[in-house]
Length: 103
Image 1 (cartoon, one colour):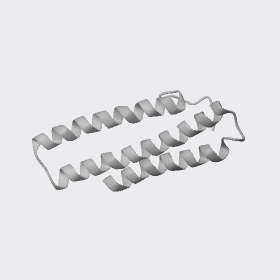
Image 2: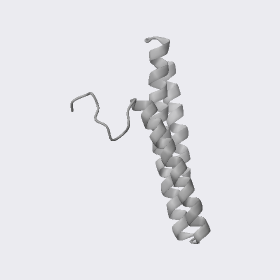
Image 3: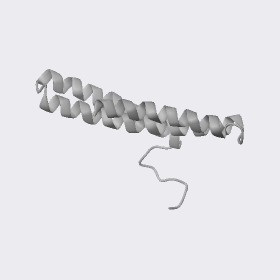
Image 4: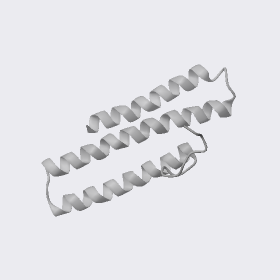
């Protein structure tokens, strides 16, 4: 799962960069940059989810001690804060608030 998480993050940046380079000519620089940032952040968020899952599984199955559980807790808090900050950066709102768009 750690390898999948890293591949998702790298793949997200590669896809975002590729789309940025392809669409760069058709849009303004600012629009292209915002689209690149949105795509790359989505890949980063998904990759972080895989990394958190890998840490949980590793702690439970390999190194089940109080120290490893505390370290896991700190890692999960840091990564959860990163995901929250990235979501706010991407969407411009907190995840639990309603969007302006009616679905």
